[in-house]
Length: 232
Image 1 (cartoon, helix red, strand yellow):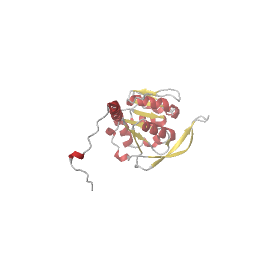
Image 2 (cartoon, one colour; image 1 turned 90 degrees about the vertical axis):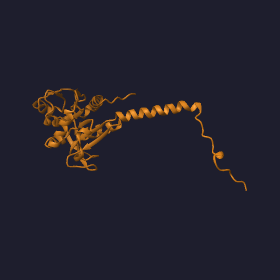
Image 3 (spheres, helix red, strand yellow; image 1 turned 45 degrees about the vertical axis):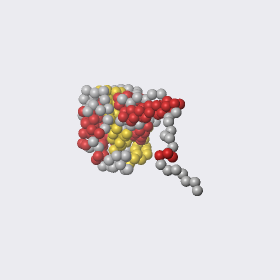
Image 4 (tube, one colour; image 1 turned 180 degrees about the vertical axis):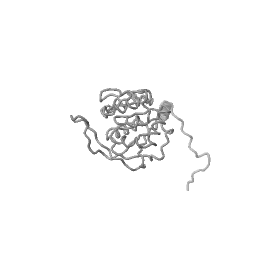
């Protein structure tokens, strides 16, 4: 019977990295470093929503911000992660104002009661019906004020300006909103930015737009204020 020798003599020599493989290994290290840098640049964002928030103005920014690598916590007063809010679809169909239809259910992914403004880098406020009643919640208004006092980026679209006005942060600021909200912007001490429906306006940390047709401009400006750079 032939027995295999045991001990150090039978250990296979450790393979050496071939010279041709060294550039690949270096490249892998660079990719890892780039990934770590991108991870460090990712932001943690808070989105304030409620029942009958506008469908597009809720889902599009939520998904877009996730797609570029940011974390987004969508919350609603009185609800927890796993609950949902109903959304409304506001459309422009030739009438003197927008039409309104039932939209999707939008799932929340964080508890409102656990929100600490200091833990976030930016705030997103969709429009629709929700801001009408969210502005009655003092905790919601204080969250908006905390973001503004800290100079953190705030993105509000359409009727989202109702929260900004109720929180008292528009004094001396220029703000876009759905045109029907212009009186509220002015009564809050702000200047209403009359921009096209597909455009947005930035005033310092505040990025606003009149409605969902402005999503490309609004989100691009918000990403710029966040310091997010997308290269092609």
